[in-house]
Length: 127
Image (cartoon, rainbow, N blue to C red; front, top):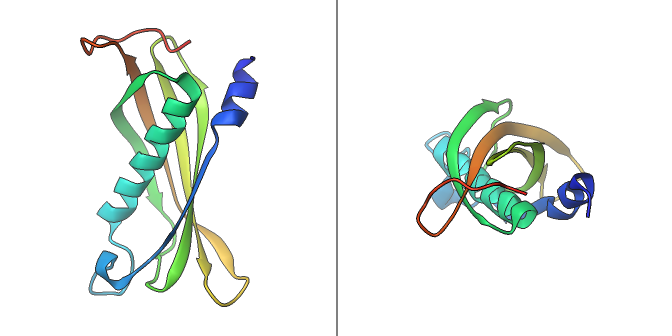
């Protein structure tokens, strides 16, 4: 299987509802909660791509473009954007959509770097 096919096959899409227990005093999703969900999506994407043990080594940049209100649905989309020797990068986009209309827009974008490790937690080749 080519790298491009592996990238396409490892694309990960997760949907969640934004409930009040995940929001701040502005009734929008906590930034930390968004980041946790993004890291989880990125981890799943990286693991599906490599089928190896993967660990997060950095969150390179996270841009919060729009607030995510309580009572909406979020879609997290993870996609491998770079494959190195022992590491890879995954971009995660969060789209927010209203529950009872067709309105949908990108709210957050971030990139995460992962390293493949062996049983002793030493870096190994991704491919």
